[in-house]
Length: 415
Image (cartoon, rainbow, N blue to C red; front, top):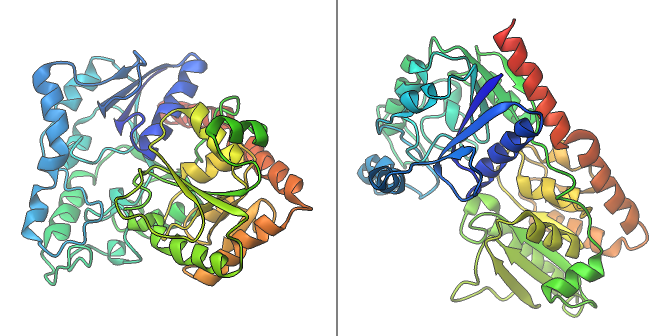
């Protein structure tokens, strides 16, 4: 079987990292797999990126060009929004590999024009890492349900017109994708429910296949050793927070983490806690949490990430909307319990007070209580860590994920 995966990147963003891991899993099972990307960070020869100077230059400017229509909406709230209007040459590039099936991942940020999907001759399997496939351009709807009918009057654009940019994008998708030979793969039950309610994708077959990890790379490391390597104090409990653009992406919930930790500060935890943040460098005017804070910047290496997760006593993921975040999955694989709001795909990963804590959505006080519950739970800490690891071993390992994709691909090719 020959498979081509398409993703905006291979390691830069969480969706790209997930696509690359699936690609690696397929290669391990001797599947003839190639991953085509717009931005390449790995040195893997089977990951194909633009080569010529012109192609590389165009790849760099495509995200900027892609966002030009947003200039007509000066009140746009600066979330992630993809218009996908720029022509591409992906049909020609894919044809060179003669694949039996094409697996789409994150194809936004100007990588693929909406109309290109109808030009592929092979069956398409689209793994949804966010909501963009069935909205009028936003990657997460921020609780807007207009995608269930048709977009327009878009709150993220701060638009008050029915026939706005979101309606134009929605109509292009509806016209171009009506006859696709397409199967949807969702990562979480929440995303499955969203797809079934959406006007654009509700009639396509849907399979739920969660992301998987290489559990030889993400595994518990002795806490004292991890702290020593990272230069973290042995006598403090470590609260970990991390995401791409951790402190600036509002959806990831840094604005909820800050007041929750301030509540802990009021509970006289100053001498016991250190906060560690990855995915962002220290800002010029860092917030004062009341206890030491260390910023690690962006980490792309799995070993470094495993060390950071293993050194932590609790990982906090205060996202306002999220699908199946890699950070929570990676943390659990390293045996570190997680605290998150009970939203999106978090319940698929976190079992309340079993391997972590699910706070009531947007309840800052409950988020703080969850962090404190784990830090105080010294008698059951080994059980929490063991159950965190066990959850990933049984439900989210890479072998299970890859075999489920192979089964799906075979059923599509040979129904």
